[in-house]
Structures are given as structure tokens and as C-alpha cells.
Picture 1 (tube, rainbow, N blue to C red):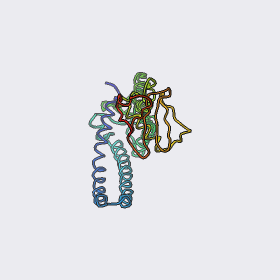
Picture 2: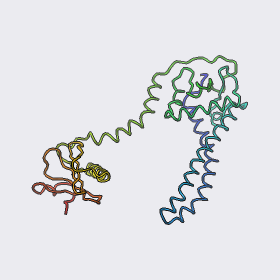
Picture 3: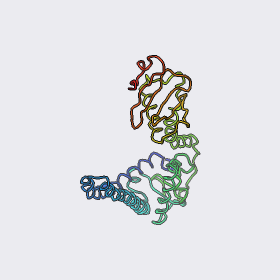
Picture 4: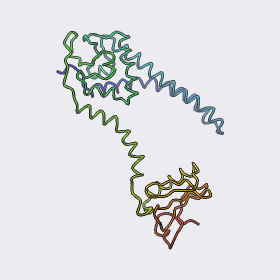
Length: 282
């Protein structure tokens, strides 16, 4: 049997422990919120609501602090006990040992779990390291010189090195970067969708995107002398109204009247407003 606990067994153990710790934290937070909720429901004006919100925000902060303190105490006590494992690790038949394969003392266990803070700041990558390092150590294990092993391991046995898993490293990097890739794609893709042939106002999705862009320009109040050029469209203001037209000559212009939220169509030549999804300006 393998000496070291696999990544997924550690992950399941971690989730079990978080669920266990979230119960007392959640109950206390609920009690505090119930005390403040009547004040929020009774608030009628913006000033009264603003007076209640800081207290609720403080409860949220204290809840997170309480969870963190309980987490450190719980993990340090359990991992330094004779079981060498939290309840989650016990459920997965794994335990924590030091560099000599021996049980950790309380302060060593506390320092090990405190080191997990670093992994939170680097978007959990430190936890994924347990999937590919040679001794299946997460970042906090490396920092504390500890190992997570299967219960079949006996103190005094050698702690071998295992093959480095480059595939798992690539997978971990992809998982960590995926949220950022998705975010950048959501921001950038609309600007790379070509609209040079026309404003494509028959497409409701592009109409909504154009309307959002024009509303944003209205909020920052860009002057007519400083237009924006996005995807072959010129966006500018005049007398408080926002206009959008093709950079090349177009048959119509889209308009967002001052202090309005809905765009409309202004004909430049002919009856082109009748053939698109935007209503004709009055």
C-alpha cells in the first residue's frame, strides 16, 4: 500500500472538517443576525439602513475570525492527539506525522495549519501541490516538515520519495488559472466580436451590449471631442445625448437620450430604422 495519502482523500477529509466547523460558527452567526435583522427590517430611510449595516458587516468579519480560530485549535488538538488526525482524516483513514514519522506536538500542529493561510493567498495552489510533489506534501506540509500518510504507516518506517507527477502539476495550474481565464474572456470577447459590416442591431445580445456601453459612457460624461472607437463603432456625446454609429458611413445612428436608459434609432438616410431591433427615436 502507498505510504502517503492521495490528494482526493485529503480533499474529502478537508471538506468534512470544514462542514463540522461551520456548524457552531453558522449557529452563532445566525443568532447575531437574528438580533440585528429586526432593526434592518424596521429601517425606513437610507440613513437608518446605513446605521444598521456596519453592525451586520462586523458580525460577518467576527464570524470569519471565529471560524479561523476554531479551525486552528481543532486541527492542532486533533492532529497532536494519539489519533494524529482530525475527524475528517479519521474518516478517510489518514494521519499526520513529522519528518521522523512521529506524532506532532500541539504547537507543531498549530504552525502546520497556520501555514495554510499562505495557500489561501495564492489561490489554493499550495493545497494542489499534494497531488504532484515527491512526498505528496502540500505547501504547509513543506513549511512545517510534515507528511500526511495512510493509517497503515507505522512510526519508524522510512518515508520514501515517489515519482514527480508533471501531469498533475499542469492540471493544478490550469485549475488555478481557469477563473482568471474565464474572467478575461468574459471581458475581452465582446470587444473582439466583429461588427464592422453593420451595428448588427437585429441581434438582441449585441443590442444589450451596445446599450450597456452607451450607458457607461453617459455615466462618465465623455465629451463630443473625445469619442471612443470600439469594434468599428464610434461612440460619442452631444448635448448630453450619447450616439453610436459605424466608423464607416452608416445608414442610421443609435442614440441614448440624456437621462434615459433605453437606446433608439435615428435614420440617416431612407427607412433603415424599420429593419432593426431598436425602436425609432421620437
